[in-house]
Length: 551
Image 1 (cartoon, helix red, strand yellow):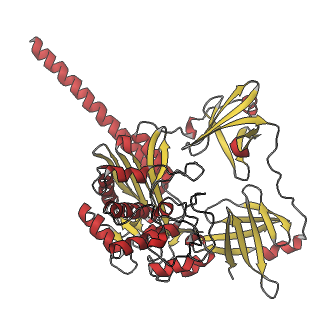
Image 2 (cartoon, rainbow, N blue to C red):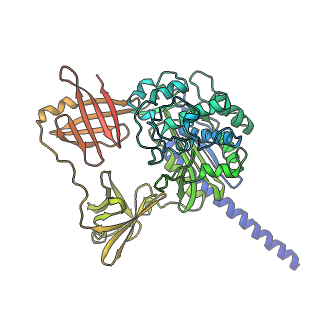
Image 3 (cartoon, helix red, strand yellow):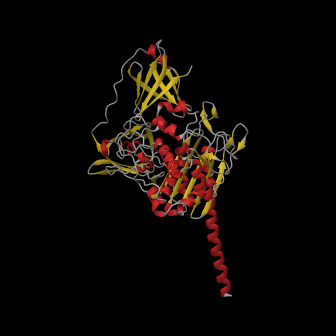
């Protein structure tokens, strides 16, 4: 009888564990559904998602629409352009050739392209892989958009940017660079004596059983291909045409969440590469001065609430994607969407955090503080490298602004901890030796800000111009196929609004030249021979982007 009771108690204990695990899994699935549906469900472009952890698929789902015109719902089997996640495949292909003894990451690119104009600079395969080459990225060149519909060979692409001035000396800076991966694709072809698409198919897709993955094509019939969309003023429109010869080894592959899981498993299990070679791709490379780049070879180095992560996203006409790998937990999150203009990266990070049991805080958890409690932290804080962040108080709320950036609200979780809307970025305020301290934390980045009497660099001086001129600037300016700058007036003030962004006021520093106060950017309007405003050039982040005025 006692043994029977013990068995019964054991069964009840096991049943309780099973019930608890089932409930936990259900809660996770509900959370994942909510995060995905908030952004992609309903009668709009959708998303496919898969969450895999330690040998098990925790979640596999699709929401939204694969084709708006035909009313076709998205399903996990839909094929989607993965954009710059392609760089992972290119990097692995290079490392596979390295293991075969056919190249070294220390080889100079002139070994494979003898006539490349390196101008005495030592540009290596390593520099291409980790975006430290200094070569001009062709997708940042004004002429790129004019080529979007044109088929080009890899050598024609390289010829397009190779004579451009370098942005910096190799290894001295980090700047995301698509040109580097175009050259890497060409190197793969030179060394393997096969087209890039054929090499990827024969050495990766076929051995791994990735039967729904392709080198992209606009003419080939692709079963289950999801149509790509871009935001429009009144909803959505078909994305602009892009010849997939142009993204090439930097962004032309297509896949499904199921095939991307096969890719993840091959990487995790060292199926394609030895562990030592894989770790080269996962190592946070450094600049010549020792500063980390937070990039390996085809993967970004980051963290999720203290857990080291390896990540990459993609964005291409009509599609955005995000993939996250947490090696210690063998966690993989992949989200593929058929819309551009809005990356699923934040959703993927939040899903990964929940899967790890380390969710980020949400603004719904914010508490109410008195005005005195809030105003306690108002002031300027100086960080390393003379970075300033200002905390201001308005209408019962605190706001944060990094010098030259946007003003953003912050939300209190208690009297000293405040989070930004995304939940990933936070301040922990405190007092040290009578001075206020603002410890700033973002994913993979931390900094200590000390209260200072110094002021951020003064803004440009605003001048007065004849308000009768302002209507001459009003109109729409096409900076890219899916990026329109709309200029409007309100009284004697001029405003600009970019696709998918809030309306911002611009201020005159000269006739035809205006600057923004919330971000470090300016607009210079140009005129035709008749004196009529015909175009605008946006200067921001070291780039110059010209947009013609639409009739």
